[in-house]
Length: 623
Image (cartoon, rainbow, N blue to C red):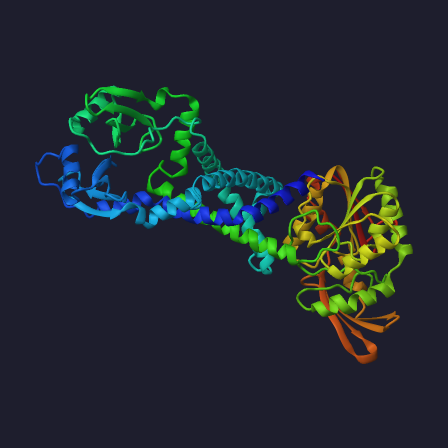
């Protein structure tokens, strides 16, 4: 299986399996990253400190919490710094966790709430362990790893578009919703990748290390305890910790059995504002038991500490947190759009194995008519309905197909281009497979691309009848994303011109991208300069089902031929269409000659010289 096809399938499988997790983690993370702002809004309500009054001691802050909630056990004290409220953690007799907000400037109680009943606490459990405990942490860690792989495969699939960067971010708003949805998914994924990859990687690291206690040596995890009798004042413990790590600031204290106090400190240069260093102090003697300076720790610990700070948006302030919110919402949007596109892909019948991404379903017919009408009867999405395309057109085209013409044209193409024996050939659009089968008979590996399910099914049946391998893809050719895979690419019988000029230019670039270096592209279309005076107002075509009257009108201002065709026996309108005709100089400019080593010009698929009187233009471009 080719690398690009494997990357696409892997991207789809990972997306389907992890999309729900990405949706949950993205939305919950977008809220949790704003936690400092929610907490800051509580501090904004604090009353100004009395003028000239000294700041209360740490012991005074704890005592204020004890007076408000007598009988509760103090377990921790968090010091966010600045004018933000200090947070005293307490436990009631049943083990319920209470958080008390204390004004660090005046020692007044600003409020209290049950920590485990907080919506943010519930959201944090959902984000970190999916309410599944240790198993949930394992799942979250694995989700992070899978999302890294998802981002890398998405980048690989998107990268060829950077040969013309604006394609990578173009959204075709006027297109049908599958097209617009795919473009949005592509562009949003490329933009969000800057956020997606580091957040997924750091989340995976945090989730995995949480399952391996020995991987990262964190602070003691024993159950918290109240200060025992004989313990030194908390201020004394804090000063001891500061002496142990000069220049570091205290961010939190936890009171543990022993009795000991685990003092979290932030050393200069640490990314995490909550601190990644630890000093353990004996609360009875005031002696420092352990010093864990993050600057002196192994690189694995520093990596973990920095990853934690980056993952929670603790670096950069409110602007960075706002970007994290957008990134989380983008992740959720990617999950939703990915599911929609996967569902659309699953519902779209494919005549055979598909090697490219789920494609927008635009209309395109491949039929083979007599020379005067061989490329005029086309399916146009703007005016043809699907019932005609699926029911009437296959019957008409079956009466017009010419195996002799296809064999002759393929013979000239292969004789002129001489692709390697058994090489890969792209035929787009392939219709019911006349040229694809003629190539497969000669031993080539042929991939046919067409939008019509009916035509592809006919091609599949014809290939089965003669036992020839044929890879068929249901896709609009404007959305082909092959890259460096083919020795020869074909676009025959005026299959260009049904779109806008920009889209036709994009289509030609798609063919160039699909070729290997040295590969050839054969383009066969009508000659605009001949059509100026060579288009008859009406033509009659006889088919086994009856006579078809074709009415033509050429608009010299737009270079478009408008056609309507009728079944004479019951005067029934079979369909209407229009096609943009190009002159040689226009096609050469659209091909961008600098991308090709040579471009040859012919007047037909038999190698005849081109003149202004040639009905057709055949270009053979070598990459």
